[in-house]
Length: 117
Image 1 (cartoon, rainbow, N blue to C red):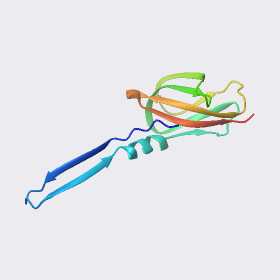
Image 2 (image 1 turned 90 degrees about the vertical axis):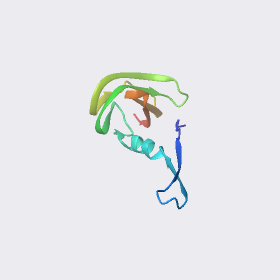
Image 3 (image 1 turned 45 degrees about the vertical axis):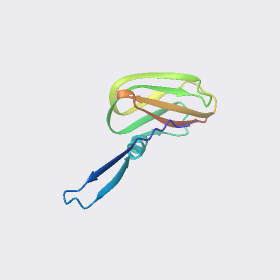
Image 4 (image 1 turned 45 degrees about the horizontal axis):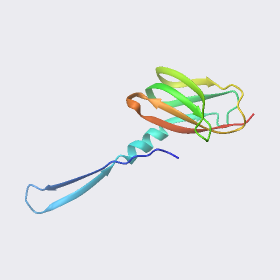
């Protein structure tokens, strides 16, 4: 399950003409969705490798590949800015895995990776 945290900001103010007040609400969910769609993994399903692509050059600390129980299978140390990078996969059992892409400022993105041999 995704770890999604929403921050709602409510502002109440009086306008210059003192004609009343207004309440506006903004959410960071759009930023989370943008971050999720900024990265793609292909081919997916994968066999011997996968390629991570980002829409902009982002500093990526590492990628953690886990099984559906959360057990860490592979840790890729990246520590560089990339827009595209290919990662080799050792032989893994067919199944669905989670790739946690850990970015700068402790932000992370989760992507599903399907392995079919």
